Amino acid sequence: MSQNEVKTMWMKTRSVRTGRSRVCAKVEWPFRMLKRVFGFTKVRYRGIKNNYEWLCVAFVLVSIYQHRRRLARINLRLAPQGGVVCPLEAE
Image (tube, rainbow, N blue to C red; front, side):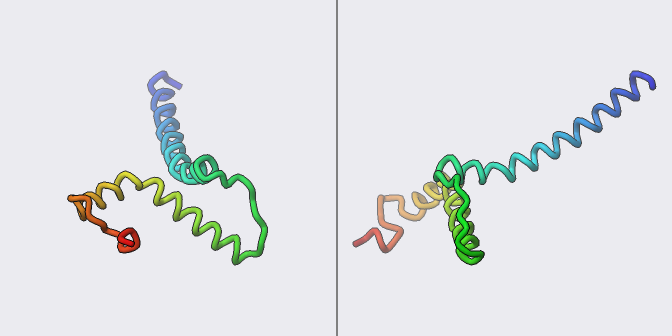
């Protein structure tokens, strides 16, 4: 094999590995937040329905946590003078 062929093969392999790493990072990030930020490290076996509901709620929390800055900006745009957006906060 010539040096040029080796370099071409190495670049293709590198691009495949880079793509896989990007996908893994995007998939693993919510699980890391779930464990580190919210402290959910134990697996709970309380029936399929309860496990499913717990998982849905946990990932909703992760989603809100990931977008907290964007949600804060939206809230400021809706109530710029310090007004109340959420009716529950008015009480």
